[in-house]
Image (cartoon, rainbow, N blue to C red; front, side):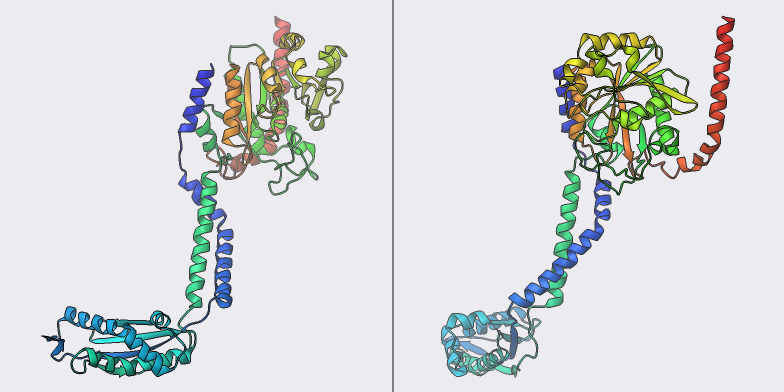
Length: 520
């Protein structure tokens, strides 16, 4: 069995799929953050440029390359008008002469500047102008007057230096340098664009990578990728998803729990829940009925979750209520003895309860309480009782097994609210007595690692997993929740008319059963 579980787990881990649509939605959802980050980066780059980068000024002088017959040493050669390669070679020759130590030292002496040969060489650049016979010499300096002085000094010295190396005059001055009116660098608009693009790209990559490596379950597709069990129902979020505090869904934790300060209990349990939520639980009820057709007279269904705070207790209550609407005899048992919550959701007393019976303090008839959420529907509840120091020992006792066997004879369905299997081991102990497990998975809360681990633990003890209930589904929670406003909303107006007739049909059905029993 362990090999089977490991094999399934390895197969799940080996499948790596990249959902580009999900990544794109995550980027679009965070586009405001990306744009704000990009603007801030642009501001930081421009501010840093202003305070940290020294402005530089450029002054240029241009020279014309002679096309006459020239001689270098004892070798003579001529350059035709169309011989661009030869022209480039001649320009390169002049640039080499310009970079020579003798030429630049003459420029330093002529300009009377306090610079070394290496410093001046770094300040000078020369190149041909658009592949013509004109080349340009540019001097860059943090002082505009110095750049103009050095450029004009080169314009005076270079032709003389060339005449000493090349026979005859081979370069004439085309244009002298002028004092630059504005710095050539840095360019604030260019740096602003670079900073904006850099911030945009980096933040986009961060959002994409975070979404790519995020294992949080965002949609039904994520559940299907990490387990083979079907999604039986998708229950919409019945509370405000934008308000957080308290521990209504909690199990001793306060992460991502929902705010219910102004929410009545009847809004999340019983008949007054939203139409979409009611239909989801009815769908779950129908699928459960088909899951136990002609197999077991009274199925015992355990409801658990991978993590605390996923709404398993809320699902247990609404499932019990939904089954009771069919005139089924339903018993709801709170086996979460460490953090019980059914008593806070239903009009029942926490004590006496299951722990009191298992420890011999109460009889079975003392702990079964009748819960009526409306006048036409009711079911029985066994609360958790006093918090015991040894819940695992109580849940795994022979007395627990015997009482469940006796309760099977009195009910049509038994719903057991189990602790989260990823938090404590109580759920695995009590799961030995159930006929099937429902796993509640809360959207944007549970992750695929925790869900896979929970499934593996139940499969290890050979407990049947009936399926998954996706809870707190938003409007774009995957293909199982895309009917939020497109499908259910079309039929929600009929719900206010259907409720009076439901009670009529239930009473008629009860009358038919009574007449049948009399005839028998």
